[in-house]
Length: 147
Image (cartoon, rainbow, N blue to C red; front, side, top):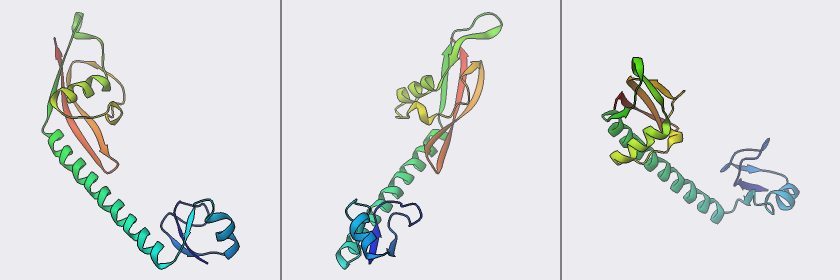
């Protein structure tokens, strides 16, 4: 029986694959569990339309991320911190602080998208990577200065 897989199946195929399986396997397991559809003209056409829409959405998100990346590369953030003797800062500058600065500038970036290996504990200029999309990473210049 010809089927179209709706979900990835180990040892069988990936979502969207059209394949031939034994009739009993399709009728008794794959179709009732919602893992596959019978491959007739209507289902093939429907699935191709869904795949086309997913591809368009993916391209829109990628373009939006690329545009945002270009804006963030030209952005420079300044975070004033309190310092003690020998210019040692109290506490640290974390991804939460950077996300708040970006929000104040009008960019909605989640703190989990900011890729800090460890909190910043010294004054200086830093290049902070921000992962906007699995394929797009931007870099923001961060100045940590005395308050």
